[in-house]
Amino acid sequence: MKLQGGINFRDMGGYLTTDGRRVKKNRLYRSGSLSRLTAEDCAQLEALGVTDILDYRDLKESAADKDVVWNGARYECHPANPESHSVKNDNHDFWADENLRVIPHDFMESLYKQLPFANRAYQRLFERVQPLETGALVQHCAVGKDRTGVGSALMLLSLGVSRDAVLEDYLRTEQTLQPFREQVLSKVESKLSTKGLENLHYLMSVKENFLGSALDAIHQRYGSMDRYFAVEYSLTPEKLAALKKNYLE
Image 1 (cartoon, rainbow, N blue to C red):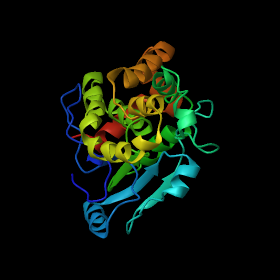
Image 2 (tube, helix red, strand yellow):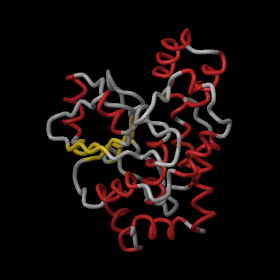
Image 3 (tube, rainbow, N blue to C red):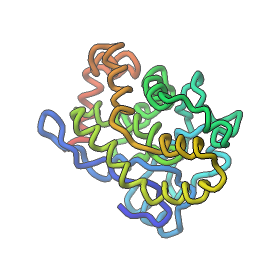
Image 4 (tube, one colour):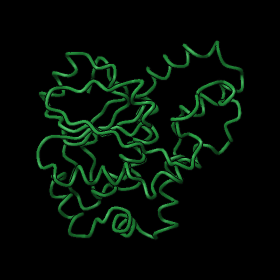
C-alpha cells in the first residue's frame, strides 16, 4: 500500500495461521509516524475505513511530530517504551551524538526483552481490537520497527500466525523502511562522529535476533503464548477464539 507521506505503512493481512485460516486484509495495519500524510493519503485511509490510530511513541515524540488524523479516525497515544530503559525519549535528546556514541552493544536486544511485559500500550492494543468488528486499526511508532514490531508480532501471534511468519513480517521492514532510513542518515551523517553514525545504523537496522529476543523472553517466562496472553492481557481461550473469528477468514 502506497501513501505519499507514509513511513513503512503496510497491511498486516494475508498471513496464514497454523489452522489454515488467513488474516483478513484491511483490518490491521502497521506504520511509522503519520505526521507527513497528505490530503490524498487521508482520503485513501478514510475510504479504506481505517478508524483507529494507536500511537506508541513517547509523549515528547508525539507532541513534536503530531500525527495527521483523518476524518472519522480515533487517535490515542500510549507510550510503549519501558520506563526502565534508556530509550525512553521524554527527558533527553536520545539522538545526540554524545548519547549515540555510548549505546551498549546489546541495546536493542535489551529493549526487545523488556517490551512484551507489563506494557500498557500493548494492553491497550488488545482492548481496542477486541470490540472492533468493523473498521481497521493502525498501530505505529516513529518508524514502525521496534515498538510497532513487537506490537504487530503479538497481534499476529494472538491470531495463530506461526513464529516463522511473524519473523518474516518483521524482517520486511528492512526493505519497506529503506527509503526513509536513507533520508535520515543522509541528513545527520555529517553531524555525527564515526561511532555515533555506526550506532545509528545499528539502531535503525532490522535483525531477526531483535524480535527473537522478545519472543524467547516470553517463552522463558511463561512457557507458552497462550499463558502469556492469558496473564498479560486477560485473553482467555474464549476471547482468543472471538478475536480469531473477527480477524481471520
